[in-house]
Image 1 (spheres, rainbow, N blue to C red):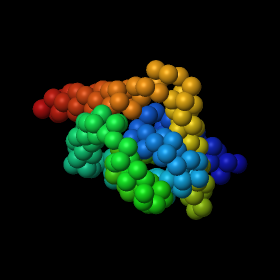
Image 2: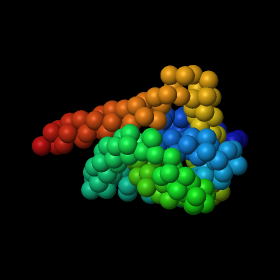
Image 3: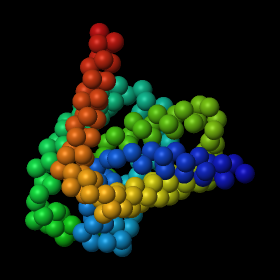
Image 4: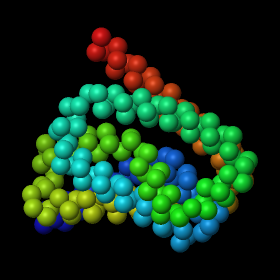
Length: 210
């Protein structure tokens, strides 16, 4: 019963956490539009291969990672710069079909591995949630039970990302406004807003510590 509970909680948390729009989902959507379903599935397997490592180690070392203030500060600053950079890249790259085709000429699996490796935001996300779930005893990770939790989590990421990619494709195909402005304005604006939100949050936390 505990193994089923671990799997369910891991799946639900990861599924909901992977649905909000992020650059991994955006790249997966572009890949789906340019190359189809099978390369997109390969890309998602690459993404979850890194996600598996992140979830496992943040589960084992959750308390140590949560106490590491320097690491948390670095991740926050990196995330802010990265979000602003993504807003710029997607805005100026939305009209460039050449750059997109060159990017997707590489193995979709390797592309997923590389981009997922750059997604440092996953570290505080999984550290915080794993620490909470352990402290509240929602999951139990003795023996092989931890692997059921990790398995549920990576399946949740895979399903959540695939659902969002297919949904983006549906709206981009059937809704003229989304098709026209998604890559040029909507997605860059979302990354810009997220970057500003993270920057304000970082400044607020810094003032509290002073």
